[in-house]
Length: 424
Image 1 (cartoon, helix red, strand yellow):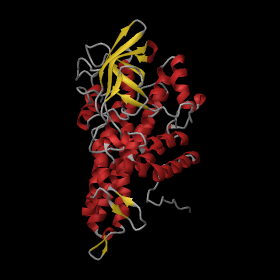
Image 2 (cartoon, rainbow, N blue to C red):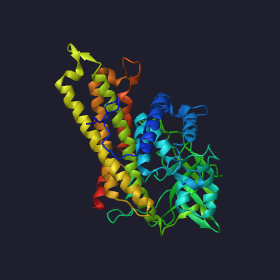
Image 3 (cartoon, one colour):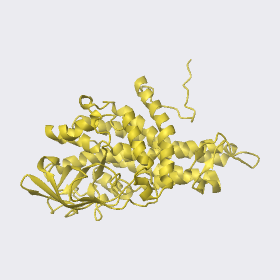
Image 4 (spheres, rainbow, N blue to C red):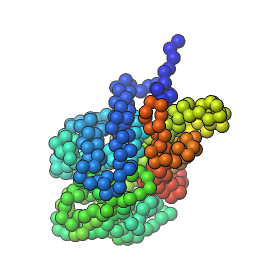
C-alpha cells in the first residue's frame, strides 16, 4: 500500500487528480514565492510608500522577473503569446505566490487586466494595439490595474445594479465628443498598482442617473490630462502600491470604450463573480503563511520545559487554524474554478458564491494571523518577527496587517455579505 506524502510544511494536497504538469507549475511557483516574492514583500513592507514606488524600488525588478518567468500571462491566449494554462494551474500558482506575499500576488494578478479585457471585449484593432504586444512579450514594461473605486463610491460600486441599492452618479465621467471620449474626475486612493501601472481597465460613469449606467475603457495612463496622486501610506498590504488616478479632459479614442451603459451591468457582474473569489485566493495566502510559520515556531520555542507544541492549549489553537485554512482552501478553489470556468464559456459565475468565498476566507485568514501572533508571544509583535533555528524569519505582525486589509479590499465584508444575500 502506497503512502501519500506531505510537503515539508505539513501540507497534504487533497486533490489527487491534479495532473503532473500542474504540480510542476505549483512547485515552480512555490520556489518563486520563497526565493523572490517573500523577500521582495518584506523589503517593500519596510519602505515608505514613496520609496516603494520610486525609481530603483525592488518592485520594478520583481515585476520584470515575473514577466520573464511567465507569471503575468498564465492563462493568456496562446495565439498572442500567452501560456494558455488551465484555471486549476492558475489557482495553484497564485496560492503559492500569495503565500509568499499577498500584496505582490495582487500586483501580478492585476498585471494582465487591461490586455485580457481588450482581448475578451475589444475590437481586432484594440487587440492588435494592446493585447498582442503584452502577451507576446514585446512590451515587458507594460502592466495593468483595475480602476473602479472612487472617493465617494467604494463597495457600492459593486452593488449599485441591485434593486436594493440605486445610487446616482459617479465621479469619473465619460462623455462622447465626436470620435473620442472625454474623461474627467478621479478614482480613489485604493486603486491597486494605480500609481505605477502603465494601463488601466477603467470602470467609469456615462449616464449620471445611476452607477449602473457606466462604461468600461482601456486607458493608457500616459495620455495627456492623466495624473497620479501620492502613493497611499497604509496599514497593511504595503507591498501593493495604491493611489489615485486623476482625469482632466482626457481624450480617448472611441474604440477604447469596450462596454457602454447597455452592456455595463453584464460586464460588472461577470467581473464581480471573478474578482471577489480572486481576492479570497490572495488572502488565503496570508492565512497559509501565518499557519505554516506558527506551526514551525511552536515546534522550536521552549516554554515550561518543553516545546510549546506539546502543550494542549497550543495544539487546540493550531488545529483551529488548520480547520479554517483547509475550509477556506476548499471553498476558494471550488468557487474559483467554477466561476472562471463559466467566464471562459462566456457565462456569468455565481456572485453569491464569490462573495461567500471572499468573506469567509478573509475572515479566516485574519483569525489565523491573529492566533499566530498569540502563539509567538511578544516576539510576534515585532516588525522583524521571529527567527527560526535555520536562520529564516517569520513576521506574523505583517501577515495580520495584510489579512486585515483584505477584509476591506474588493468590497467591505459586511457590504459583500448583504450583496451576496441579494443574489440568493
